[in-house]
Length: 151
Length: 151
DNA sequence: ATCCTGAGTCCAATTTATGGACTCAGGATG
DNA sequence: CATCCTGAGTCCATAAATTGGACTCAGGAT
Picture 1 (cartoon, rainbow over the protein chains, first blue to last red):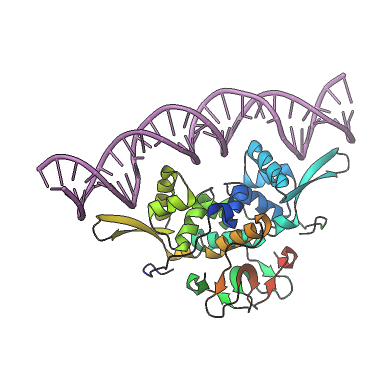
Picture 2 (cartoon, each protein chain N blue to C red):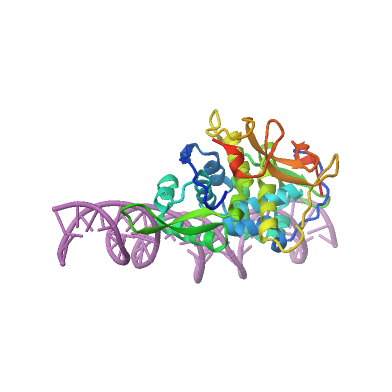
C-alpha cells in the first residue's frame, strides 16, 4: 500500500465472524506456529520438537494437546523396538491446510528479517521451479500489490 | 499430509536463522495480526482500531509502537479541521508485504472454523475473479498438496 | 531389582495481559 | 478567560501465561 493513497471506507468483518480472529484464537501465540513448522518438517516426537524449537515442556505439552483438541493434529501411539508404546503427533488434513499461511510468514521473515539467502528454498516436486506463497485469482493471475485486491 | 506417509528426515532450519521464527518474534501474539488486519482495511486511527478489535489500550499502544519500531508501520501526523494535530498509523511497504500471509490465515479460518459463507470474498480488481492465498511455482503451477513440495 | 528414556507434570519466579480510571493537549464554546 | 470535549494515550492493580528446573511415571533392558 502506498504511504499516501486514500483508502476508501472498507466493509470490515466483525471479529466474531472473522476467520483471521478465529485462526488466531487457535494458533496466535509465540509457539504454536513453530510447532506446526516442526510437523511440516515431519517431526512427530515430543522431545525432538522440544530440542528443535526450545519451547518449555509445559508449553509444548499444553499446545500439542490443544492442537489435538481443535483437530489440527492427531496423537497416535507408536512403538520402537525395545521400547514401550509412546505417542507421536501428526498433522491432520486441516492442519496441513495451514501450509500456505506458514510458508507465507516464513518467506516474509526471510525477505524482510533475513540476512542473505533464505535458508529454505522450496521447490515444486514436479517441475523443480521454486515456490512462493502468493495471492492468485481463479484466472491464474498473481497479485503483486494489495491495490489489485477488491472488496 | 496423509496421516500415514513416512516423511523423510528433513533439513530443518535452526530457529535463529528461520524466517518464521523471526516473523513470529514481531507479529506472533494474539493482537498484532488483528492490528495489521485493520491497517489493511485502511483503518489508521488508534480509537477506531480499538473499537474494531477490542484490544486493551495498553496493548494496542504498545503493539503499534513496536510495529513502528520494526518498520511495519509508520506514525504520521494528521489534522482534522477544528482538531489539533494527532497521529495515525499506516503500513509501510514491508508491512503491506504481509498481505498474503494474512489472507492465507484468514481464509484458513474461514474454511475450517467458519460457519457457512466466508464473510469476505476477495476479488482481483482487474478481472473480478476471486482470489486466494496459495503456493505457486515460478512456472505458474499451483500446489494443492504439501506432498508437491520438495526440500 | 535397578537403570534408562521419552513424555510428560509440578512449582516458584517473572513476564505479559486485562480493564478501568486517569492524564494531556489544544481547539471550540460561552 | 474558563470550561468542555475528544483522540490518544498512561497508570495501576489483578489475573493469566511463560519460564526453567526439578520431579514423576511407565515399561522394556540389564
